[in-house]
Amino acid sequence: MKFIRLHNAENNTVVVINIEHICVIDTDEVGGRTVSTIYMDTVSSIQDFQVNETPEKIYAMIEEINK
Image 1 (cartoon, rainbow, N blue to C red):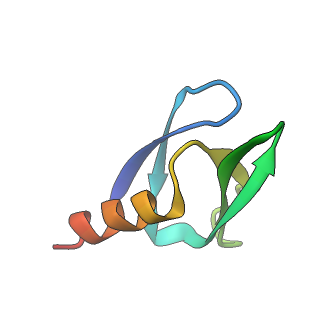
Image 2 (image 1 turned 60 degrees about the horizontal axis):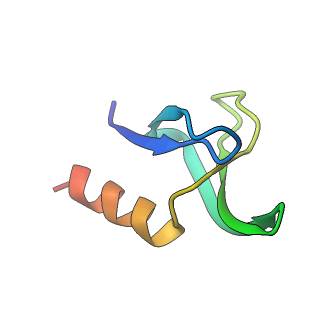
């Protein structure tokens, strides 16, 4: 398993995510600021949630971990 560390948009706490279960990363506006919404696969049974990092930064993190 491979994990990345992100920050929850609601309270800036650390979220550690298994990258194998990420399906979609989308950009949304919440409370007047831009956040990324992470959508997980149905196997993980985790509902979507928002993080502070951009989709581009998350993608770069995934690329780096897969080297």
